[in-house]
Image (cartoon, rainbow, N blue to C red; front, side, top):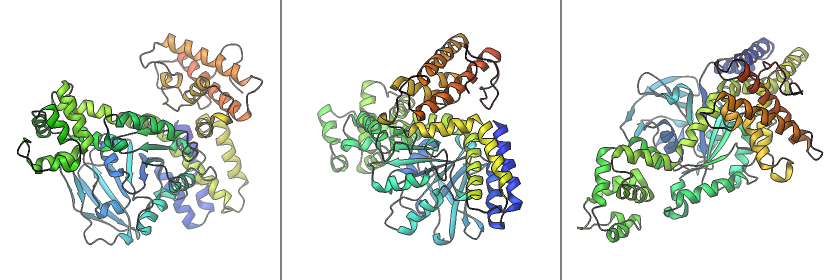
Length: 514
């Protein structure tokens, strides 16, 4: 993998002295980025729950979730040695600002700061999740303030140089035309060759689906599946995941006092408790029968939402949430945050080098396409060589293409399509992920499955009715599986197999895919 990063670094360095000073600075920035953590931006419309989701991913209060000045600025959250925040001006100036936080809330004090002169806000604190990725909270798309909305669009523009994101988590509640416009720009293949692979959509605030009814999370899962096939999202994101961000964040920061207060509520009879949880107004109404004062109930509502309180009290009554620890674990499981974390850590952070290198190569392509280099023949040859020799880049481009295929546009059946996507690395780079088997599968089981996949892809690609786009996906997936097989039978004790031209021996009778 380092070979591809080194190739990208060499391309940037070769081009740098041959362009104008401003373009050269963009290339230097891109080179620096190759050594930084992956940048993951959280984007979406106003009130989509971006800051809450970011807190849920990190597992602690880091981002302000109320309508403060900080939510109107692009805010970066990175690993650091202490809890600190700075304002970075458009002129490059940088000054520290107060950063206050508790176990359940955080505030970056921007009182008196002119946001029109601010490039971004930098927040740093110790976090294991932030060691592998920098999370970036963006202002709401389609904000009432066009200036605020423009900050997000400008930052997320794929041609934004050093300030852009490597990956975007895009939050939707209901799909709008504005979502399509934004995603189309971010995943434009003319600018970002692997756009769909570096974007994931989240059906946010999943607990509020159907007015917070009892089966809201199951309904949200079905809606997410339907959204994934909509033209607005299909081909522009790698999938749609339902997540109840507030529930996930509260689970990560649940206190013993909150658990005791919830246990107080289940002292009510079933009828009384059901009546109390019908509506927000009812839950906050003055009553001598309720064993918690209104202020305490309001605090629970802020932390859990009405659906979360219903769910938590039900879990406590059933014995599943008998302690704060077991309740937190169950709420986190039900919230949907774990699949999103796995996606960020395995699919994105696990492939950080290839995603950053792909972005760097895209930048070189863009500079050359703009005619910024007088004699660009040598650099074009280098680009062609990198593209031809890097199987990882080919995999990413194939994944992006495959995500854009509808059922009417592909001749692949469902099982073969899922197997091909996994072989290309859609679920992660580990052999068991590429082969779609259990994590504890033995080497013999992995080898047998790899051979089955080779036969499956060869048969499918030679079929009389396969279309060319599907055939290309199968050919690349076949090469990927052959690389996994070669690694399994030669050195399965080493690190995850590398597919960048390192597979050697033939698989079966046909040899490596051409």
